[in-house]
Image: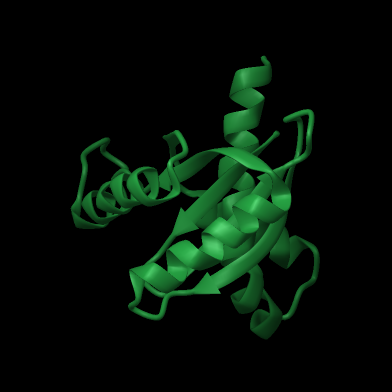
Amino acid sequence: MRIMGLDIGNKTIGVAVSDLMGLTAQGVEVIRRSGSIEEEMYSLQNLINEKEVNRIVVGLPINMNGTIGPQCEKVLEYKEKLETVLQLPVETWDERLTTVEAERLLINADMSRKKRKSVIDKMAAVIILQGFLDSKNN
């Protein structure tokens, strides 16, 4: 079974999924947040079924000083909804600077600004999930 990594933002949700052995993370897609939690859960459930996911890791946007701010509280609320609706275990992973790292990787890959904007959240989800996988495999 696979693990799904999520980078939950106000406008989008970046999605990544591990390989079957739980060693590597691959970007899957970016879900546009429409304001309908039901639609978002439906999209995630379809991906969970398709990819045979049995666990979810959510990036937790902790402040640089280690405190929990408003965005972190929103993600924790969303985590609870994920657990309730999708009936899977959901863990959190400190995502500080993942978007910065994703941006740097995409710039180094010589990706245009327009293209970076469309994949940055998916790349952040990959970084979140890969960090989680590496911590479990070491």
